[in-house]
Image (cartoon, rainbow, N blue to C red):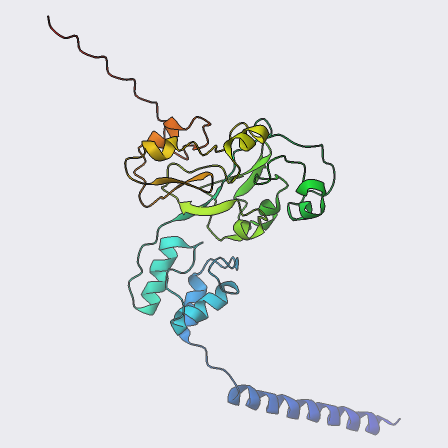
Length: 283
């Protein structure tokens, strides 16, 4: 091919590229979808974890929902009140202070307390236990299996397997809900960060059956329920539960529990008060 032919081919290709670029530029202007500036601003202040704890597909989904009025300005559980205040300022509304939530594992069946039917060696995944004889080695059908599906699901390194059961780091937990979704036995729930007591058991078996498999399970004795002066503790389906909205953190339920299945979650340990000595009656 002659030099003239090569130059002509290059000119044609170049002109074609310029023409296509011109039409793409025009199309991008005509077909562009306008994005609300507030959506971009909100996306800039959101944490960017894309954990899905807000119920939307990532931070961009939440930002779009807030602008559309489909989600509240405090809809990000990870950002909490500081982020909610910034989003509220962008939207021109006051952000109501939300109650900080943390995940809580309703099981205290550690290696020392809970019994096993057999020794297990294999894939360490709680979901996989559905295909293992007996649903896994643990004797309690309701207890934490300790194979860490929740640990793998947490994007904030806030939950770990300690002594055979999952434990939540209250300070690191962002209440994204990933561990709740991952637990096949539904042992994890949200409770207020300020909650001082919670029932660390999920067994619905009768007391004698609980004691046969775990030294610390709830036996539905109702002592916690009877001791509460605020109607905050109730035993339903053989397991106690604390209504955190009614709970006054008096610790009576924890003190009365014979199986010590109502742990104190934070603060200085409460020492039961000794009964006052009866005054001697004067003769």
